[in-house]
Each structure stands twice: as structure tokens, then as C-alpha cells.
Amino acid sequence: MKVIVTDYNPAWPEAFEREAAALRPVFGELLVAIHHIGSTAVPGLKAKPVVDIMPIVTDISAVDALVEQMSTLGYAARGEGGLPGRRYFFRDIGEIRTHNVHVFAESNTEAIDRHLAVRDYLRAHPDAVAAYGALKAELAQRVNHDIEAYMDGKDEFVRRLQAAALKWYRSRREEKPDH
Image 1 (cartoon, rainbow, N blue to C red):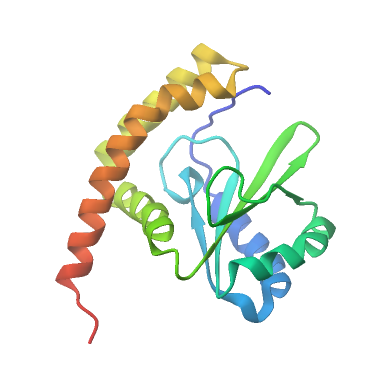
Image 2: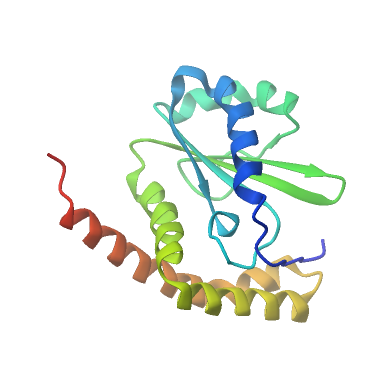
């Protein structure tokens, strides 16, 4: 599969909203929240044009019963997809991936915080957006058809980004305690 990284597309948030509206009835009363995550959720960030969606549910095991409904929306199920506690679905049109759905239980605060922290950190730090976008564009050009090499090339940057983002995210939450 060719690795394609494009400039930010202002239509991505609308694409998320349309898909979230289609997913809400599938998850029904299990759904606690639904978030646009990943690079397409960060204005100005170069990205693979794949909309990442993170539904938060009350019971992750109940999601296993939704595979057929997700299939009617064009999604393939991949179980945990390598991340314990997640249910992963994706939709391809031909050889083009269009959407990823990463479902987590509301009790999986570590995974949820990691995704939201990175998104929010990038939204607040244009220098990180520029550095991350440049790295992704350079890797996509260099590795072309090798998604594994692309992911490996981002690994160290993403680890550092996640650490900084989580520290920033948690400090912001401490500044704004719940009342």
C-alpha cells in the first residue's frame, strides 16, 4: 500500500462529523463520547487522509456484538488490533483506507488520555505540528510503499511527542480540578 501524506484538508472535521453521526446509532446506549483523533483532527498537520475516530463505551466486550452492524457501514473488524483493551475497525474503499475506529472502554483512561493528549497538544503547539508534518512528508516520500518503514520512521518522534503531550495534558487537568 502506497503511503500518502497530504496537506491538512479542512473537510476532515466534517468527514468526522458525518461518520460519527452514522456510528452513534450502532453504539447506541453503550456510547459515552466520540472523538476525532489522529492527525486529521489537528488543523494544519500533514496527514495520511484517514479519519481516526475514537468512540468511548461503557463496556468494551459488548462491542464484539456490533461487528455485523459495523460491517453494514463498510467496516472490517480486527479485534484488539494489537492494543489490549481496544476494538479496532477500519474501512477501505478499494486500496484506499478512509477511516479507522478505535473503541475503548471509559475505564481505559490511559489509552483515552494518550490519544486526546497528543491531539490537544498538537492543536496548541504549532512548532510540534510543523516538525511532525515535515517528518511524515519526508518519510512518505522516502519509503513510498512501505507502511511498516513509515511507522518505524515515526516511532521515536511519536514516543517523545506522547511523553511531552501527556505531561502537558495532565498538568492542564491539575490546573482545572473538577468541582
